[in-house]
Image 1 (cartoon, rainbow over the protein chains, first blue to last red):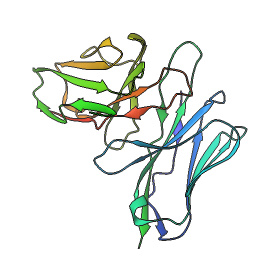
Image 2 (cartoon, rainbow over the protein chains, first blue to last red):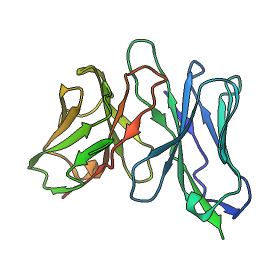
Image 3 (cartoon, one colour):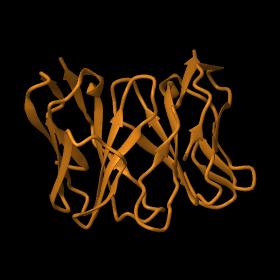
Image 4 (cartoon, rainbow over the protein chains, first blue to last red):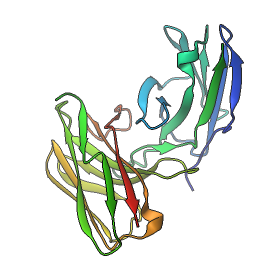
Length: 114
Length: 114
């Protein structure tokens, strides 16, 4: 059973602070990891992708990957009220036999308090 | 039109109706996907098409029938649906179906089955 686990929250963070979102996955062979942001009533939009162990930074966002621990995280620095949304962790658990699409977690609902 | 478009945006249908959802991508991609997003559940992959060939059917009931006439268009034909099929149906596309390929989502069709 392919699974991606996230704390559903809500996670409440003061404006200007760092928001830390976490995700674990079940398939040790997974190689591709994505963070999507989804506002209420909207479709997911890509924030970051990460494929190698370590950190990847893009503006206020940093993705962290630890394949040994099967753990991926997203840090949002200088959090803004506009960052309030549900953050979806997605893993491509590619079987090698064909495209498997993405396996998503349930998402973490993030609230940035002004 | 840019990105991934979906029509209709909202659909209400009875259990005996037959309807179709349409997705079109303007990104020059070769892989397209259908996902289902129900309340309180993670996004679920339904179907994957790569270069017009179906490569994944994630144990979806036969009342959902996909069609991919070319790499830019994807349909989901619906018939004799159940109320529990009410959900947001999302189409996505990627350059191809490699595990590292980033998927971009359309705005979704909100389906209500009465």
